Amino acid sequence: MGDPAIRCTVEDLLYRYAEALDDGELERWPALFVENGQYRLIPRENHQKGLPVSLILCTSRAMMEDRVVAIRKACVYTPHVCRHLHTNVRVGEVEAGHVEARANYAVYRTTEDGETVLLSVGHVEARVVLEPEPRFERMDVVYETFRIPGLLVYPI
Image (cartoon, rainbow, N blue to C red; front, side, top):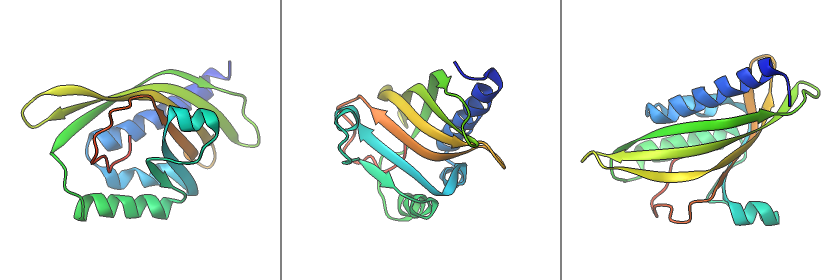
């Protein structure tokens, strides 16, 4: 079941992650990862089969920072806001200052005209470093929604 205090720590990290993305403050996103942290947005089928093909793959914080620059300067997409919901947060036992965590997610997107749609659902599998401050060492966002917008350029 894991320590409730550790679960609270992981939940707070997930909520700060969601807040950075939802508030449009993408520059805060990479700082939630360790320097050599990994982020993958991967379809459920590939994840289950152990296939590495991902919609987004960043293997370091520097790659995440490059993704933010690309989103800000080079990408064109319909203006919108998102809201992330994380539920059913589970954590394992702490081992050598790390903890494995899992949570379900849903992301809603609202466009300028006020229409809200479900953008993506799935789950997150993460490895969190607890000291000196909690950060993601690895985050796999395993999406189950097959109809992802073709211009998806930002993290979920």
